[in-house]
Amino acid sequence: MRERTAREIGRGIREKRWSAPEAAEEFLREIAGRDSQYGCFITVDPELVLSQAAAVQRKIEKGEYTGPLAGVPIAVKDNICADGLRTTCASRMLQDFVPPYDAEAVKRMKEAGMVVLGKTNLDEFAMGSTTETSAFGSTKNPWNPEHVPGGSSGGSAAAVAAGLVPAALGSDTGGSVRQPAAFCGVTGLKPTYGTVSRYGLVAYASSLDVIGVIGRDIWDCALIWDAMAALDRKDSTSLTRSDKQMFPLSDQGLAGKKIGIPKEWLEGEADHEMAAAVESAAGIMEKLGAKIQEIRLPLTAKYAVPAYYLIACAEASSNLARFDGVKYGYRTGEYQDFHELYRKTRSEGFGSEAKRRMLLGAFVLSAGHYEDYYRKACEARKRIRGEFAGVFQDFDLILGPAAPSGAPRLGESLGRPLQMYRRDIHTVAANLAGLPAVSLPAGLAQNGLPLGIQLMAAPLAEKTLFDAAASYQKEVPALVCPCRKEA
Ligand code: GLN
Image (cartoon, rainbow, N blue to C red; front, side, top):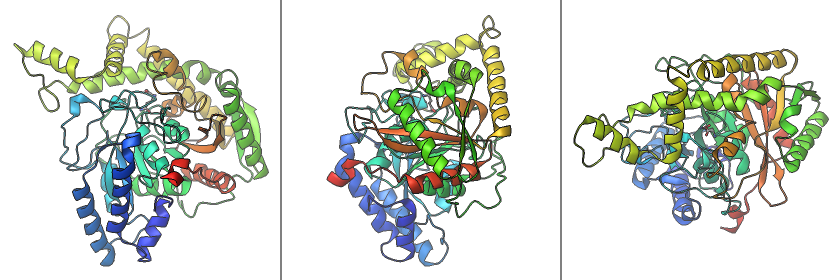
């Protein structure tokens, strides 16, 4: 079963070749047998999974669930709430937090008949690019366990790559779905900001956060997004989709499409293997009927990373202020007064990357510095949006790398945070501008690790994006991690 896509598993259930509980049991066995090598999951509750799967099976038999995803297991990043399952955000602060409700995205997954298999590892509060800042230990890249899986949704990406689950939810604030998917050789979808409700997603940076999907290929990602994406009054930034008919995805999606490749994203930023992968993808897309042209994104290239980190840290400092040891979450053992309770709880509960970001965020929001930093970052963000809007007047899609290279080694990144932040150059702009984007596997580097390219489209142009990605993936099929064959 580990070789199958989500829709193949769903089809097998509809055709009665296996049942939802059988599918769930098989993936639970995969996790029990192999996850100790990778550390993808923080929480798996087999009893809950099996009872959910049995309930789903009954509804399938009664004809209540008839969709393509009914009975299919899915993993959920551990910053997205699922009723009755611990949601830790990979932080000591929430190590025992069990939410009494489902995030809207999870609720919709369940309504489509999907079975939540478990909660996946991430960088603490989704702050990071390597899944090394987790209080539960780092996740390893299944292609080579000496390398990181990327982050922050590294547990979700590695689990899909290793065949521990057919698909997983992640969150993407600045690349956390696309970059780990690229590092693990799977497909990552960051939808238009607002298309998937943030209700029940533990906030990192609210104006940038969006729930996305990691799957084997674009067809699975599109199906799952389609089941999740809907207007939700519980999220004031939730949007109504404008697509009329999403399915079937076209395999002529690149014919006649104008695609821009930002010169700045290849020069200087991407290593030569990554640049070659983008060029080879461009060649394939051209053969499939696209018109490729070099474009410039000078403001984005210069200001996206600093603007992103200023805004993300500012919002994080405010969002994470709620973890005070009083309402819920971790509380320090001994304290004399309220101030000591607060100080000790937060000192002990948060890891160093989260602290660094909250301090930076509090600084840029402070009275003396607000104008110099935060306001300027917001202005830069406005101009970046304008730069993209200009490009999308003439182009349908933008093609670039999903990251400057393949996955770094474990332990290589955390000591040099600024360098690590800089490596988010290819992904953060889509969040600043709210654009939909996908990362797609594009072959292997010399060291045997996957490389990923990225396609972006105008806000709400998911249909254009999915059709283009589907055409590309018909030509360049999904990668198979060797660990799936060996195991
Ligand atoms: N690497 C980026 C950061 O650390 C993005 C994280 C994310 O998308 N959650 O902020």
